[in-house]
Image (tube, rainbow, N blue to C red; front, side, top):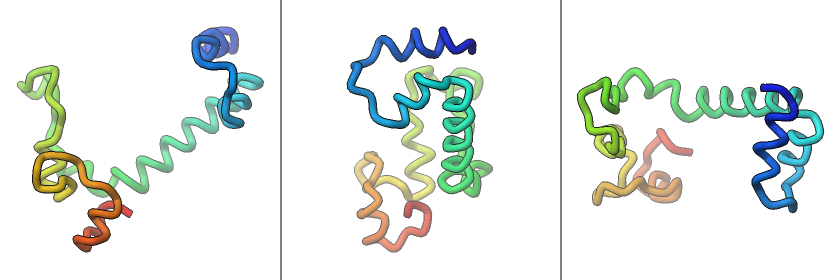
Length: 100
């Protein structure tokens, strides 16, 4: 998006911006490149290896649009046994190598 669009969206948030958000506001083009790089890194580290095993969700997969996806998380061993996503500490205690 054009820089003015990025800035207009950021103007809707509090003015006491963290450094990364201030940098995005100052130079939206460079900031968006950094954001995409961060999302890509997160994908590779946290999701890529498990993605093929995660079933599709949402209306296209025949699920209700409000589905939470907790079933997939449970099948991957990422829940605490009560359907809630566990913390990284929970996974360390259980010896899970999925969440670090």
